[in-house]
Length: 238
Image (cartoon, rainbow, N blue to C red; front, side):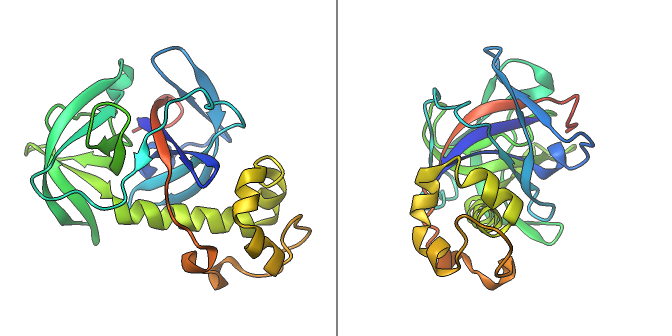
């Protein structure tokens, strides 16, 4: 499978398709790129419905990367987009596709529908953007049709939703709060008002349930960045 680096609100993540990592039985997943760089990562949040997963990044591991930005609005039907992935563990492959539908229904959920071009097995989790170089992220490749020249990708709104849920989880889960907030002081600073209001920093015990906090209450204004990294297929089958 494929994943990519995204730094959002001063916190680093890797995004990939849920089915790439959901059957992994090991506590850590190995991610690497075609330059020989590798690191260990863990799943922070996962959505089977949207087929999207958010993974952690060890502190400082991707500071050298040139980032992509998350698009501020959705692409339009007919727009040419690019996906970049590591199908079958090969070197990075860039593929040009055309957006056909922004509300394709698959398993009671809506996806972007586009032609698949050369997208194939192992490209699940690839970023979908407006350029083959660092640029705006629109979606995450989820699946290809076996019989038709079509593919679907997780749309931008669903990416924003899972990122918001992940931020809540980090802030309001004691184990994650105690681990990550001291590690990323700029991230903690962004949510200083929330942390102060609920007496969460440093967090000693859960004072409020995650479900009681909405993304709007956290002022989640999404402006992340991204780069490709390959998720080890041996540890996380596509």
